[in-house]
Length: 359
Image (cartoon, rainbow, N blue to C red):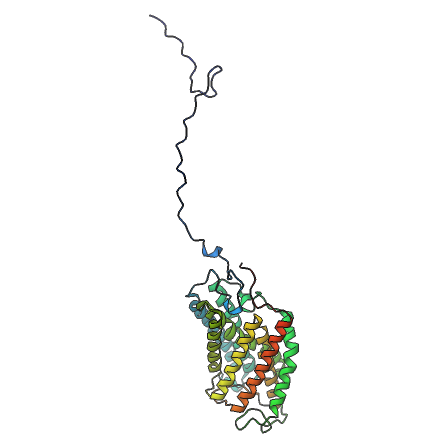
């Protein structure tokens, strides 16, 4: 039997034996050209910029890529719910305080005697609680930084706010002093026919301190809710800046007037003119600072005078409050002058009216 020849080296072994060329690898399959297009997918919402791509006015801040038609509805429901919850919590605290004090509030803890320090402070804090409610309600739904509800820079512009305090305080003090001595007709709450005898209550220092601490917060709460939140959320629905501003001014004026409780036509007109002036200040200055200052100065001076005269219990607008045509006209002139002064100041100091680059 013959012996089989010895096997040679395996040509497929690696590394190849010396003297043998490596076996070539198979060529890859040909690729299609151009490559097939990949299916487009929208970017996740959280990666989109929060602000509009172009510089936007204050009332158009929420019209960014994340804007959706339903968001103002959800934001409004959340804001109102949070505000009602805060009001309920403060009301419970007032009831407990009234029952614990053993005063007249124990018999009727819901009586709104604004001359009582606890009731006065609680009422102001209820209105001030609109600030966190609106900020949280807007941020949670629109996902835009809460500071943009204050100004187009996303924060309070303290230097601008201070300038407004310095200029508007003496201006409004002069206006209120002038109206005190004008014959504004029957039914007016000021004028020479009004009783101006100094008769402060015995606890006036407490009321004065509470006024200084809580009245600016109360004024800011009304501005954040009735100007800031309303202007920006209506801006989501209306693309045209001019129409959006006009609609928000009307809505703000009507709601602000009705919220005070009186249906007297001249008082309603006065309140609505005030609301329109605050809206125009906010739009032209790109933020709420000037409106908050004028609102605060107006309330501080009015409440301070009521404390000095011993009339704080009747100083606030309620369902029985009235006004006159002359009083409404004088108020409108004063507000027009204040608005013009604020616009001029904003132009002189280069106050930002538009947002910066999208982010």
